[in-house]
Length: 312
Image 1 (cartoon, rainbow, N blue to C red):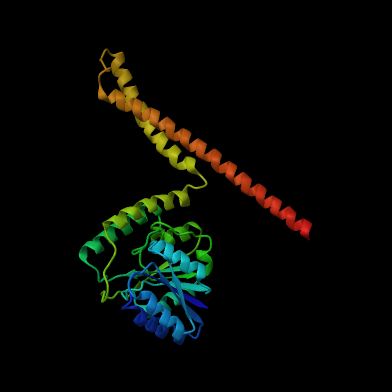
Image 2 (image 1 turned 90 degrees about the vertical axis):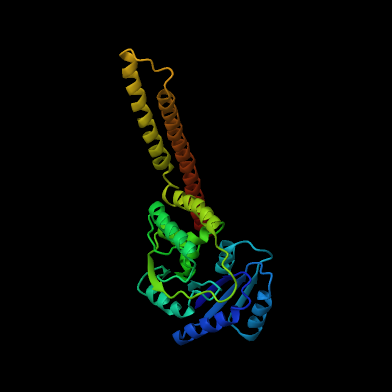
């Protein structure tokens, strides 16, 4: 069973063509499939078009959100409803080519858990291409997951990859990062990208800025969730060491008769040392909270095991 999840907003002119192209791509594979359209609060006739498709076919599922919640929420709603063993996501603007879906699924068969598309030749304005390139580079540096096009809407997943992932904000951009942190195998293949024929792009620099903050959140929760002292302690030790060196240098000058009371370097040294100590303390407190949470989880698991034994 293959589920194709399509988030959309005001795409009435492209929906029927998109469904036909998805059907043409999946019919030759011989598998059952469904197309899950998630209408993210459209104000045009998108819902009417989807309702007609639902009435005319047997494999179209329509989810209508009461207002525009954003792409992450729309994808989350689609993932909850999807029944397939394999899940494909594709944007509704016809820029992603449904004919590429079999290639993504074939790559999954090689043993990968998530396959992301790579728009090697993007048919987008220059400014958007530049913003995207910078964003992909920053994402790779911070997260350690290096993809050429982490935000490509055309992706294929094994269904278990999506279990336990909750999307909000701009987190839909970082599903490969979240999956990689959970130990799943990630791959990337080039896909065709077509010019936009209908509607308009809703992406701007402000979305990349919001995505950057979500990237910091994802990276922290992925890399340092179970070892926060490594992050806070490392930053604290570095700042404290720099502050200590500065104060040591000033102390030597004071010993040789130099006046240091009015020097800004003294304030900087004290500030770095104090803030460094605070960061280390914050890391220790975070470790205590994390270990307490893990102990409660272990205790809950033991209780569940005892209950199961009693029931047997």
